[in-house]
Image: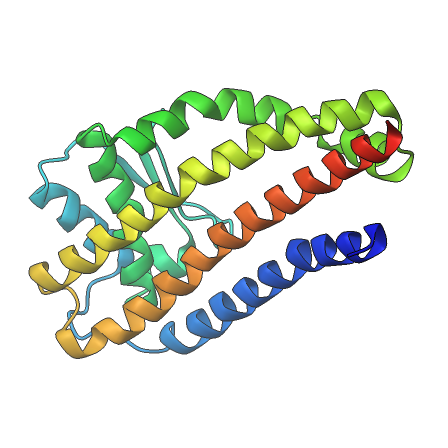
Length: 226
């Protein structure tokens, strides 16, 4: 395989998995956001109920205006849900709310991968701020200093994405079990929850693949320079 063919392959690995994952997420959300869960609970109500059953009483549930901005912040113990999830009574809304609540339960139990991700977040945020320099100086102008910097930056991002996978997969697994056991989702509604959460999980896999591919690109540039 020639150098050019390797570059093309790496570009495919950067963009194609992300596009496929995004398509899967949008398709699943479009379908199951229209399917009302028979329990009649909103995402916020489901999250509150799940956390109460888990003995979690110090997490604040908030509405965020960011589309797909649903997340749990362990630093502030805040569960942020987008409007369609916070107020929604759909299968998708309950699945997403339960997934984010799964992170609060991980925090309560000091789940090791979550603890590791929390520890590396400050470093990841700092290195992410260097990405514009890496893209312009490393990928476009191929300046040696920025190529070396880029290798360090993407190495950190790869580690972060690797740690993120078990955190997200575990939160989804917890959500699926909790939703059924609690009766918030009926057995025949679980297919929708599975499709939504499995599609969302693909975005994290795609992010890892892209980070690895970009790291390999920079390593190849560094090798060519030498």
